[in-house]
Length: 224
Image (cartoon, rainbow, N blue to C red; front, side, top):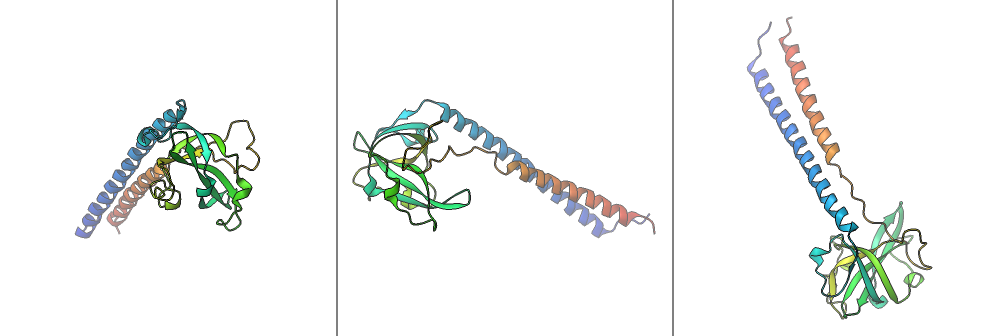
């Protein structure tokens, strides 16, 4: 049997290192998966709690992903459009409207989606709802990089203080949307993300490298 060369030994060491790295990355992705599932469990528990009545004293940190109830008057003069937003591959926009609460503060309400051929312009008057509103929705963080619908970025654009989150108005189960209302978004889905598939990929790479290295060494060590 032909002996292994120094090059073969170095290649084997490198292959073992690559296998170890792939296994470590696979384990890390599994840990991320467990963290994601634990976080989703907390969010589900928060959503199942009774709605919180909103006021200017509401603490944003305690309300993330909680169902909230906001009653007040819409300020359509300061309405913002979140654009573009796609729904089933159709372009559109979200109508984000400040709701003035009884104590004088306000909260941005994502009233829902409306179609827009260019994903930018829309006849907002077609989607006006009654000024007085009783809204039930989820308290969510403002979308990243969207200063046009971020309460912190808009604090100097409206003549009243804004709560530090956006209320995503939820559809009413079993009831059609009111005439002229935009289409309400359902609650954001809580999936596992890509962590399991990534873990499987890393473990697969480890197996491929290990078996490939063994096969190559056996071929090199074969007589003749």
